[in-house]
Image (cartoon, rainbow, N blue to C red; front, side):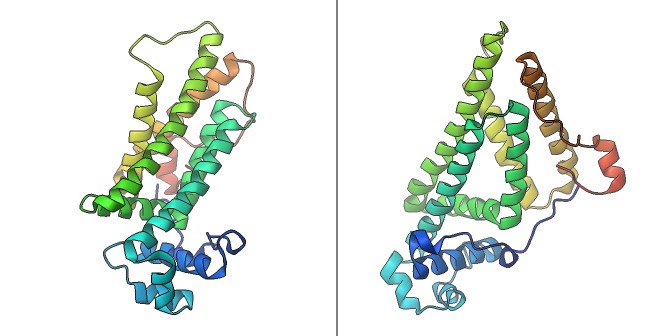
Amino acid sequence: MDHPVAAPDSVPRLFAEAELGETKAKILDATFRRLAREGYAALSVREIAKDAGVNHALISYHFHGKDQLVIAVLDEANRRLLQRQQQMYGAPTGFAEKWRSARRFYQSDLASGFVRVQAELWAASFSNPELRAKFMPQLLAWKEVVLGGVREALAQLSAQGAELPRPFSAEVIATWISEFWLGMEFADLIGASEQQLQHGAALDAVEYLLEALDARAGKPAPAPKRPRQAGARKKKGRSEK
């Protein structure tokens, strides 16, 4: 079940010139693509300037160095991601459809290089306190969005007269989801193809539970094309995740 991943240079521009200004948008876009293609350790300000078509002195002028530049990339990319996630959870659709949207977003982020950029900056933050101080709040903000979605789902369940046993709090379930998702990201990035069938099956199982919750609440989600069973995927040799 291989995930199709586009080359970073083949995806659309990620940073809007109308919001950031032409020079900043070009620099941030070039930095993002370099991070997604080559990683943090190989990042060169001169090469970024060359890709962006600007004098490298402009990078120092706008961002004061490499670390501030990658922090700016993370800030802007993460702002867009959180905005998208919040809109998804706030949409008037069933929980299963929101889960399917999250899966589609993940595939898009994997293809654009955003998943690798996050992983690169997470790894770099282990030995870089300044980067870690900026990275961790962004990670926690995403986890809060996940927690909000779980709380809403449990509230819906409670409204239908069903309660989970006390240990299964929203915080516990949100931790399972977010930590599983992060582990899946790293496995996909390092090419652990033998794990991808299991990941797909786990995501399918959550979707099945959410469909049951939607049906109980009288809000069935639109009927999408159902994923193949894990064995069928393996036989065809492709992913429908």
